Amino acid sequence: MTRLYHVPLSPFCRKVRLTLAEKKVEVELVEERYWEQGAEFLRRNPAGKVPVMRMNGKVMSESQAICEYLDETIPDPKLMPSDAEGRYEVRRLCSWFDDKFHDEVTSKLLYERVNKKVMGQGYPESKHVKLGASRIKYHLDYLSWLLDQRRWLAGNEMTLADFAAAAHLSSLDYISDVDWNRSQTVKDWYAKIKSRPSFRSILADQVPGFPPPAHYADLDF
Image (cartoon, rainbow, N blue to C red; front, side):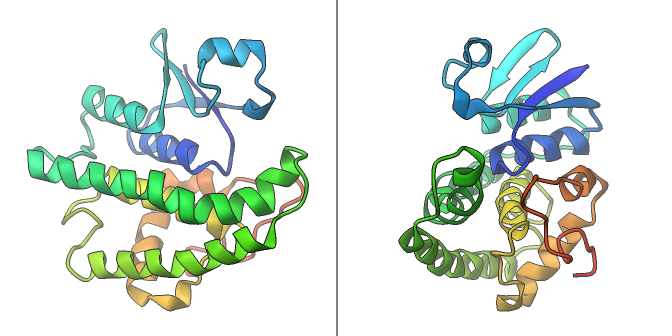
């Protein structure tokens, strides 16, 4: 069986989980305290990061590389466009969320509010939280602008770009840090992707000491 070493609220792990579920791959989820940098974990991934996936005797790391591997080896359903321009746009948006959004928002809100406590690294720094709360507005507006022109983020078909964005937003929604009233367009897009069967395990996540808000698993939020 495929095994995924992960952290429940990690957006990078969630992107891989969504891809596996969409491809209908049965997977064993193993929570990994990667911050402890244990010798066994570092043997699996010397970079010391999650996700790490073991599949068909291979050990793989880096969420985007894993997701594109899955899309190439399990072609149905396709999550990357067949044309070069389409693939470029998907990769651009995945990078936008995994780099820019992660740096400006996820690391400032989720990591400060949750990760620090879980890892025993102290209390949130208010200046970081305020900065993240400010920057997410810009990103939601960008999402709204994209969706005003397209059915999905990268075009007219659902792709890995949608999973990358939904992975980050779902992690933040778990701690009530997404203002869904800012854009009805973005809320409708998230409701659509949130309602997919592949999202069920994400919505079932529970982090000890951090109960999700009532709307988190509500498909009609």
